[in-house]
Image (cartoon, rainbow, N blue to C red; front, side, top):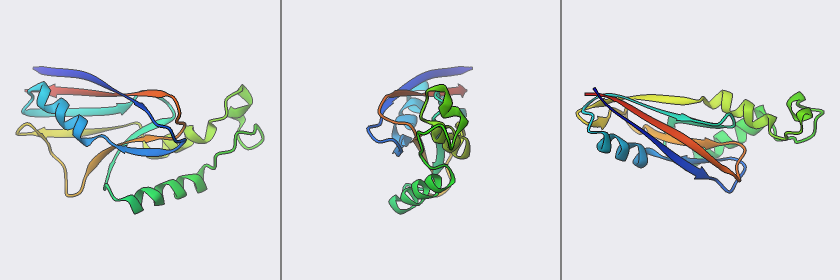
Length: 140
């Protein structure tokens, strides 16, 4: 069985943003030589996410507004108990929980087996510092 482990590092300058990482994941699949298998992509931080959706700017703006309505950024310790620990990012933990930790995509004939319009995104919810994404590929 073939396998590849690769990490990507991101330093997103905004507190919340989305980065299309499809090309980087496709390159890892090519590098692995796997023709039939699975590709796991996961955020290695508890205030970041990996998800699949359309690469459409209006949708991304909708996500940002929706997530901010669900879990508003509020660094004070009154809204979120987590912020009583000295952190100010409780909202980012909630946003990550909603958007998810990872995706798994089938590899068929050496390519990611996507549906129409599907792309892989890194979601950042507590930016301005470096964070990693793991790509793990296994198969034949």
